[in-house]
Image (cartoon, rainbow, N blue to C red):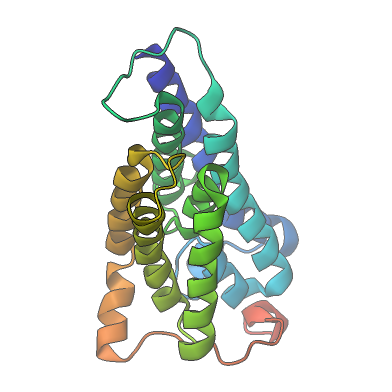
Length: 227
């Protein structure tokens, strides 16, 4: 249990690093939560500050998930005590670390518990655990975004694609290294992401969701002199 507690705490603190907020303040002296959608995520950073800040924010958010699931999850202070039938303890710790990091991103202690929606951090977590499933998920995300110009719809499609891909690869094609805990925990992450996007879902249904106008490198509100 000690391992799990340490992993959860450290992963939450890493997940709480407000990449978009710090990048915005460092590059432009702007709090991205005060502009655009008001969300402290990479998508709003692109919208407000342009592609350079957006790329940096994305890298930070992905890195938080990779660090939590790829490094922090390996910490062992005491012998493994979490034993569940058919579940690999190491993978289970990765998923625990990943969920803690996503919660930290959504409710960051370093930024007044006002965070982003966790998509990029979740992607980093899942890339650390099963990269092939994530490449398939990323492909679906890109196809949906390019065809509809809705980033939120692509995010929702990705959230549903990952557990579906894991289930097919494990239970249809028999890829044994995909532990059952990955499927179960990915369902929990997907549920959390869908909940975090509930306002986007409402806007999509109402036809008022923001769409990408062009796929040229975004200048953002800052680049257009709107701040």
